[in-house]
Length: 179
Ligand SMILES: [Ca+2]
Ligand SMILES: [Ca+2]
Image 1 (cartoon, helix red, strand yellow):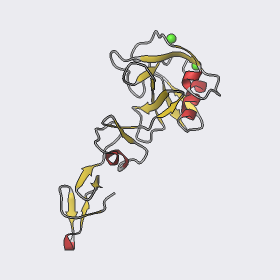
Image 2 (tube, rainbow, N blue to C red):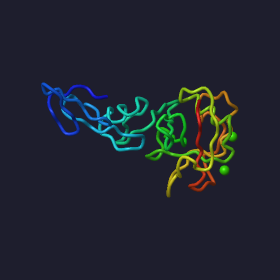
Image 3 (tube, protein in one colour):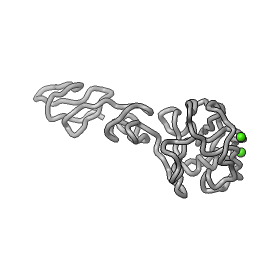
Image 4 (cartoon, helix red, strand yellow):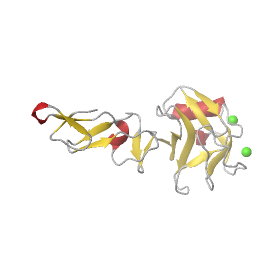
C-alpha cells in the first residue's frame, strides 16, 4: 500500500511539506521507488511487486506465481487460474526431472485426485477440472503423470497410483478448484 516517500518520485503524489505517497496501483519500495503492483502471471523483480497486489502470490523465477509446496521431493503449485490461487492447472516438478514445470494429464482426473492435490496445498477439498480450462500445456510441454488413480487419503499426488508414460496431447491438462 501507499506509504510515505522521502521525496517525490515517479508515480507518487505529494502534499504539503513534501509528504509523498505512491499512486494507487503502485507500492513503496524502500522509500526510493513507486513500483507497479503485478497480477498473477506478470513479470516481477521483488516479492513486493506480487504481494502488494495479492499477499498470497510470490515472485518466483521472475513471474508472480501461486505459492508452491514440496512433498516427498516433488514440488506442486497451481497456475493459470485467478489471483486467489485456489484454482488453476496443476503443475509439478520432481527432483531430478527435466527443467521446468510439468503437467498432469486429465485422463481419469477425478474428485479423489483433485482432493489429494488440494490437501497437499493446504486446502480441504478439491474439484477436478479438465480440458485445459486454465490454459494449455503448450507445444513440447512435459507431462509427469497420467491416469492418476488416488484413493483420497494419499499425502501427495505422486503417492497415488499413476502412469509415468502418457498418451495425452497439449489440450489435456488437469486442473482443480480447491476449497
Ligand atoms: Ca492416459
Ligand atoms: Ca482418477
